[in-house]
Figure 1 (cartoon, rainbow, N blue to C red):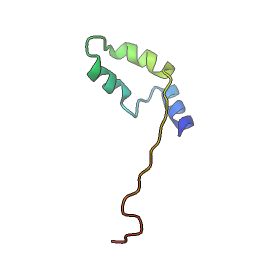
Figure 2 (cartoon, rainbow, N blue to C red):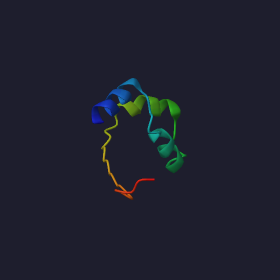
Figure 3 (tube, rainbow, N blue to C red):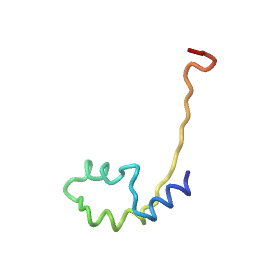
Figure 4 (cartoon, rainbow, N blue to C red):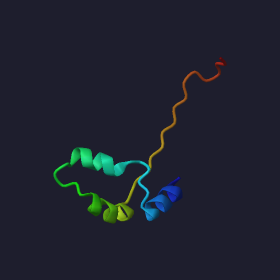
Length: 59
C-alpha cells in the first residue's frame, strides 16, 4: 500500500483528497498551484486499522 501511495504521489494524483483536508483547515493559506507543487514531496505516514464485526455470523 505504501508503494502504491508513493507512486500515485509521484504522478500528482491526490486520491486521498489530502489537499481538500488542508484547504478546509487552512483556507487563508490554500493555493491550488502551490499544493500541486508540494504534494509529491510531502511525507505521508500510512496507518491501517482493521476491525471485524459479527464474525462467524452468516446472513
